[in-house]
Image (cartoon, rainbow, N blue to C red; front, side, top):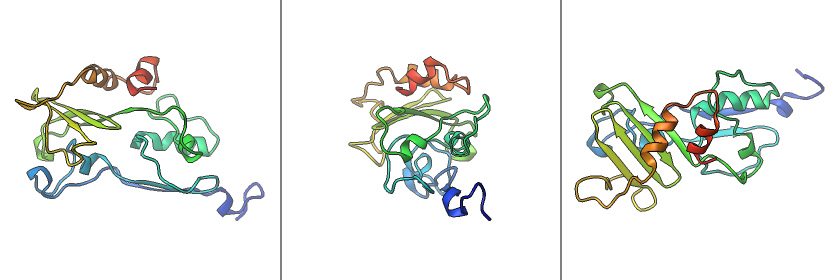
Length: 186
């Protein structure tokens, strides 16, 4: 069927992604999901369609970006209550400015393999705060498997401004305030 003079191949976008990753034996945990580790929070998103350049991007994107992206591609405004941002600029090449931090969270508790947590994921680090008060910091460039918690006793880590950024992002919502954009590094 043609719509607006275009064939389906000219106006169809296909998204392939999952809502989470899984672990099985990583970090001494049996099979599961919902931990703040890369195996669970970092997963692929593949998009094909007209105008999308071939290639990959390492920019931080979250599930909450899917709805605004689909709305953007359909040339409609996403409702005000929708979180996230359109990733269409990533389809057009590497934008000069993109988020540098992303909130990840789980409130499900121990049956998910870890106590409830909130994490700030940047391009090179993961900072985690558990409801229990424990904290973790991983340098993903030097420790991609997250085995060396830099905030453990005797660790060499400094959380710097990460707790404040995490707290700001936890309070962010669809209102897309300047404060939230600053916490994301925009």
